[in-house]
Every structure is written in structure tokens, then in C-alpha cells.
Length: 286
Length: 266
Image (cartoon, rainbow over all chains, first blue to last red; front, side, top):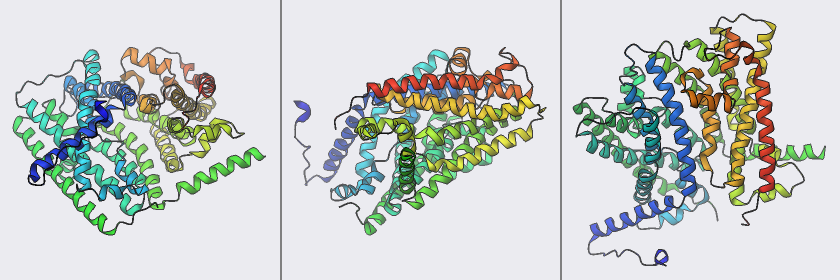
């Protein structure tokens, strides 16, 4: 009965840093395990990702085939296919959709249990979300990429820098996405229910993060504005651009740096909003 | 009469609960309309890159997108929320639905009617209107009839797919987003000329599931274009039959699903 063992990680008051790391790791593990129990949902979600992979891949390839030089937005056919199929997996790692934990807890009043804990809710949920992302990385990326590779020629990275930069970029995408989702969910502190903002987020994030089409297909001024003025391209488009080597190395590093700036801003904003909310919160429910 | 009053009460309850959080409901109304607008904007983005995609121009593709958008919105607005069935099955709330002396499907549909999608209807209709204006269509009685029957048949087909997808929850409770591949996936499939898809994938979705008859075949007939994939011109008029067949299948599956249902006991 190992799984039901009631031991808790030892937190020593004399070593606060180590204590925080232990807590953070325990919360991450809980996030990982929670999603590991949704096995059937993982299978169903993967199937849907694959169907949309085919749909988007065929349409983008047809668009590229209709241009002079057979490139769309600066991507050739292999890069487009890689963009779509890895994107269908990465979508779950980044966790663009479906996270309503916080808003539901605010609506029901359960949030009060999070507030009495000695860890800030932003940190606690971030840790759990990184665990969730880790689980998705292990289970949700492989199948669509495999199917994509079976049916379409994919691009393989040729620069050594691509692999480490992609890893950093994915991590930043998860953190940035978490910050955005936390803020969207936190509107429930003021609205009582975050359904409206959540729908708004689902729509906006899908199209502006580069899921429906690579943002490079947009006019340059619009694409640059999105990159600089919003965190959204950093959630999907930037890691995918890094992976398919769309730009020269220097520009790729620059884009990831921009992504990091946005991730920090969103996280800080989430922390600030949480503190503001705590000052005015009236817990619902009885 | 009593039955109708019961359905009206269900719908009234839905109306009150949807509007309970006004700010959220207003945001939902607007964003749902924006959803359809984004789908259409995506088509423009693609045609910004290439003048011809899959052998069709922007205006021709827009006609397909318009028929699809309108048909899908009609279906989504009326039976779309049946995909909540999974929650009903998992939580055991379906028990309460089953013990009432009313049919299961209408109860679920009315109790969950997604009013927030109301504004989508206007967007879908205007896209179709714009597409019709931008194409030079040689109007005949047959084509006018087609313009009416195609979106309605498309809506019926999408509705049947919604019910079929939702019914998987009777056998597989955690089917989750599985159905979205066919409902939203079907919408995406038929938003573009089906010539863009690879052959086996196209055969499966267009002819196997019938999505080719939602917008592609009717649009070809409206435009007076021969099908590059070889179906005769009258194929555009087949949509009602395809929709009816889908409804037949959906009805059989739904009924056996309800019979198969065992409460979770919670």
C-alpha cells in the first residue's frame, strides 16, 4: 500500500530555501499524478488532436502548394507539417484550454482552503501546472508527432542550438500560458463566474498563439505587434518556430528572450491580481 | 399539452440560469459570435498567401465556408450542448432525466440550450450573404431551392453527428473531447474545398461521414462548376438524403445507448 503512505516531505524551518524546493516538488508531483489518472481522457484527447492535425496539415500544405515557390509564410512543406503536428502535441503541454480549477474554486468558495495554506496560490498552482505539463509532455506529444511522421515528410532540426533552445522555449510557454490562464480564471474574483472570460480566452488564445495557422501568414506589422504587445505568440508559435528553424539563430534567441520577458510579466501580474483579490474577497458558499 | 408545458419550464429554467451572471453572459454572447468570425477570417488569411487553394478562388471557398458556418451554427445552437451528456452520465444526473415522463433527448437539449451562441447565427447568415453577393450565380428555381435546403440539411447532418458523438459516453464515460474531432472537425473539414485533403482522409470524411455534401457539392452546383473529383452535378441535391441517413443512424445509436445506460450509482 505504498500509494496510501501518509508521510509528508520534511520541511525544516531552519532551511527555508530547501523547504520551498521540497514543497514545490511535492506540488508538481501531485499535478503529474492527478493527470496520470485521467487515462481514458488522454486517449480521447489524443485522437482528437490527430484528427485536427490532419485537417490543419492538409489545408496548410494546399495553401503552400498554391504559392509560387511552394512556401507559405516562409515555411516550406516539411516545416509546415512539423509545425502542425508538433503543435497538436504541444497544445496539451502548454495547456491552452480546459483549466478552470481556480475559477471553479472561487465560484464555489473552496478557494478559502487555498488561502489558509502557507504557500501562495499562484506558486502552488504553478507547481501543479508544471507537473501537469510534464505529464502531457510524456504522453501527449509522441502520438501526434508519430502519426504526422507516418503520413507526411517532417523537418528535422539541423542546428545544435535548436534542441536546448526548444526545451527552454517550451518551459517558458508553459509558465506564460499558466500566467494568462491564472489571470483569466481570477476574473471570477470580481465577476463571480469566469465562463465569459474563459470562452474569450479559448478563442483568442487559439488563433493568436498560432494554433489555427502560423502567425507568419499575417501581415508583418500585425505579426510584430502580436509578438511585442501580447504574450500569446510565446505560448505556441515561438517554440514551434524554434523547432522548425524558421529564423536565423540570433533572431530565435531574441524571440525566446521576448518570450521570457512575457512569462515573467504574466506571472508577476498573476501575483499582483491575487493579492488585490485577497483584499476584497468575500468567500461564496456557506 | 402538459408535455409542452414541461419542456417550456425546462427552457425557462435554462434561460434564467444562463442570464444569472449577466456580465459573463454578455461576454459569452459576443465571444461566441467572434468564434465564427475567426473561422472566416482564417479563410481570408490563407487566401492572402495563395490566390488559389485546392483549385478554388477565395470567393468560391467563401461560399463553402458560408454554407458551413450557417449550417453548423444552426445545429450547434439547437443540439450542440448534447456533448454535456458525458457529465450527466458520469455524475449520475442522467437518472433524474430518465425517471421523468418525457423523452430523454429533448429534455437534455432544452435544459442545456446554449443561448450564448445566439449571436453566431447572425454572423453565419451574414457570411453566407456576403459569399452569395461575391459570386456570380446564375439563379434558377433549382438553385434557389438548393440555397434553402443545403444549410438546413447540413444542420441536420451536424446535429446527427453531435448526437452520435455524445452517445459514445453511454459506452465510454470518459470519452471527453473524442466527439470534437467529428463535430468541430467536421465543421473545419467542410469549411474548405475538399480537394485540399489527401485521398483516404477525404474519402472518410466527405463520403463516409457525409461532410462532402454539407457545402462542397451544393456550392459546386450553385456555382455551376463541374466536380474535379468526378461526382455528377446532381450530387449537390443529395444533401437532404445524406442528412436523413445520418439521422437514422444517430437515432438507432442513441436508442441503444439509452438502453445500455447503467447508472453510476452515485
